[in-house]
Length: 372
Image (cartoon, rainbow, N blue to C red; front, top):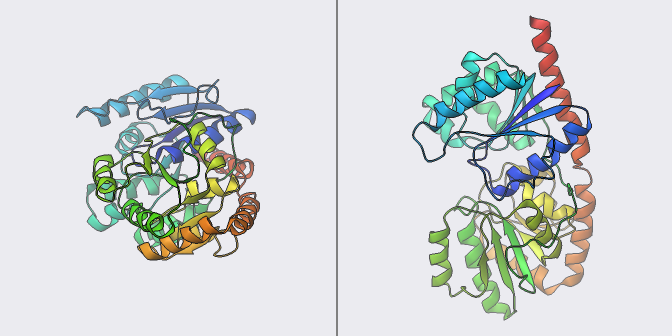
């Protein structure tokens, strides 16, 4: 079976994109399948070349050009014909699905549509993108979502398409041995957070809480932020809070570097105001780190308060600061939560998840063959 993976990365944090590609591609190939990877642009956060060995890769369009979408559709049309793709698997996060929509109008390839987040903006506006996504969901052979929370959210917006939905969570576990590839020298004791730098991810709350944590404890501690987004806005907030020497903005880091940081940080923190799953949180748990996470969305499905992590109410900077202070002051608590977090992550094994994806891909192909 030749599988085309379209991992839409315009809305992804670099970590999420890299994890999906780094785990799914090698496992599909070990099962004897051929993989064709389509991506939006070349980016240092993408998996290393060694992981993509034997995988055909296409970089679509020109992100800065007004003709990006039709160009991407033309490239996919040509590549699907050339590679003789059997089934496509679209991992959807943001809103950039136009290229595949245009392709699907002319190439009746069976496809699986996987949602990694809830398209709240589309649902609220009910504009052209909403109806295009509705078309793609109706035409999809199978639809998967990464959490029960996301399944329920989509049920309200697209009730007619939910009959073919299956929950397949994201996985945890290292695809390969992480190396010392951090973009700078490790800053002694540090707290890590990975994700897009935006207000939805609660970066403003995290910086305020971290400022108060240092003020009240006097600890020599750093905060490392990995991700791209609104750097200038948060750099200004960092200056206003006097945290220039305490907060490191390392941008989009390669997957190997993120894994290395997760293995060496004091603990991991997420301050998101919304979260459909929380893959970076789960990856940190797999690395044996204690985590601080918000009580939102899919996070509830694997983080249990006081058992394998600490939870706080979303938007509560004081609660976030209190949770971080507990982990900072109590090494035994960090160790206990980290050990249980590692055990929890074993239940999200990429081998099982990849097999589940292989099954829905095969079902989509067989259904297409049977309908001819």
